[in-house]
Image 1 (tube, rainbow, N blue to C red):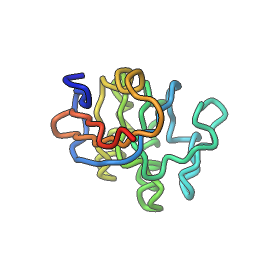
Image 2 (image 1 turned 60 degrees about the vertical axis):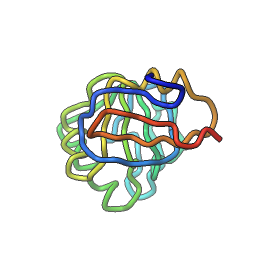
Image 3 (image 1 turned 120 degrees about the vertical axis):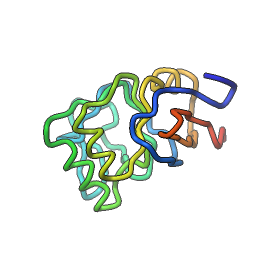
Image 4 (image 1 turned 90 degrees about the horizontal axis):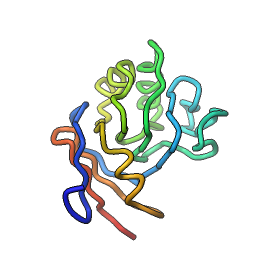
Length: 140
């Protein structure tokens, strides 16, 4: 964290997006954890089960991927049920990166734990995949 309201990670997918933070303590899979038509998390292993990723900044320790994960992220975008940005602690799965590039979803890696540990409650984040900066916009 560079100041009271900013974190720095590594920009993986370029772009800038703003949305409410949706924070998970478990790795996330776009293949099986989410209903692409609604954006609702349905995976049994996810602590976000029952939440929606649509329009949110998804903050996760890691992504669990498969070779087809990119298609699910791309389809989420087609249904307008996609996360606006993704923040990870670990480098994201290559297929998730591919899907994010195709869908225009910025990804910043290496900052999820700091973001998760520093914020509580409803927070709006801006994610800059070009610079790797994450800013708290609305501390509500």
